[in-house]
Image (cartoon, rainbow, N blue to C red; front, side, top):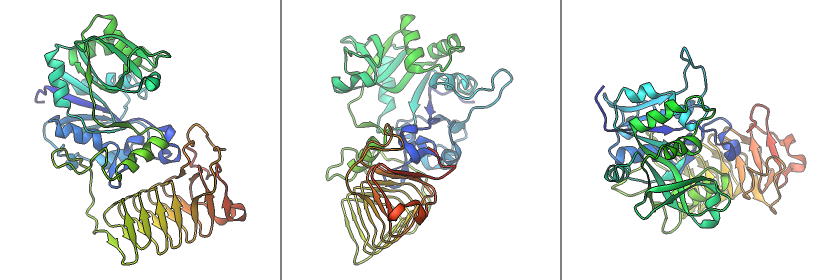
Length: 424
C-alpha cells in the first residue's frame, strides 16, 4: 500500500454506560447528536478537514449501527483506493482470541493494519468527544519539537483537574511529569485523550507492554514513554471540546447548539461536519405550529410548539403538543396534546396522545442514581409510551410500555420502567 505520513486510529468501542438507556443497544460514538449527526462524525470530520485520509475505526460494543453509519466512508470523502476508512472489530487470531481490553491493547491488536501503511506518525483519537480541531497543526508542533509523543491538553478549572490525567509541562511545553487523576493536582492541563506518536516509539511501547492487562494510554503507555526519557510534549488546545459521557453533559452540549450565539457552530463553511445523509423530504411546519430557538431535522413535521430543543430527522409532532428544552431523536412519533420538558427521547420511539413527560418535582433515581442524576427524563430508542399518562422528572424508560405499567396513569419522579431485554 502507499506509504502514509500519518494515519489515525479512532477508538470507538466504548459502551458509554453513563448514558444509561441511550446506549443499551448502541455504542456511544453512534449516539445521535445535534439533530442529524452522530458523535463519531466529529472526529471523522476533523480528520478529513485536517488532511488525514486514512482512518482505522476500532469498534467493539454493539458495532452494528456504527458499521452501517460509516459504510465505505463516502460521506466523509473517505472512500478511497489507498487509505480511506476501515472498520476494525476485534478478531480471532492463532495466538489471541481477546476482546480489546484497553485503549492501547486495541491498537496493539491492529499493529499489522498500521504497518501496512508504514506511517511515520500515528494519531490516536477517541470516538466520543464533540469538538473541531486541526490535527495538522498538532502534527507540525510534534515535528517542530522533535517530539516522540505529543498529548493534546486543555486548561481546565483547577478544582475539576482531579477528574483527568494531568500534565505538568515546562515553559517549552515539554512534559516533565504526568499524574493520572491526582487528588491534589499541581497543574490544570488535562489530557484530551488525543495523541500523536512517532510510530517507532509507540510500536516499541506496545510490544513492551503487550502482556499488561487492560493496557491503556493514560495509565500505561504515557508513563512507560516517560520512564524511558522520551520527549513528550503538551499541545494546548483552547477551542470548544466536550466529553458527552454523561446524560447531563450530552443534554447540555445539544442545548448549547441552540443558544443565540452558539459556543459550538455547526454551520462554519470552512470546517464542515460531514455525516451520512439519507435523502429525506424537507421539513414541514404547519401554520398553527410555533418553533423558537431550535434545530429541526429534515423530513420533520411539526403541528405543535417547539421551544429551545433539538429535533432529529423524520420526527412528527402532533397538534397542541409542546416540547421544551428537550432532545427528540430521529423518526420519533409524538402524538397530539403531549407536553415534553427536559427530556431525551431515543430514536424510533412513540409517545401517545395527551401524555405529559417531565412533570412535578425532582427526586433521586431509584434505578441508578449515578447515571440518572440530571433532572432529565431519558427514554431509550424503540420505546412506546401509551396515551394519557403522566411521567415525573429524572425518570428512565426503555421498551414497549403499556397503560398497566403506570399505576393510576403515573410514573413518579425518580421512577423507571425497564422492560426485559432492555437493561442498561
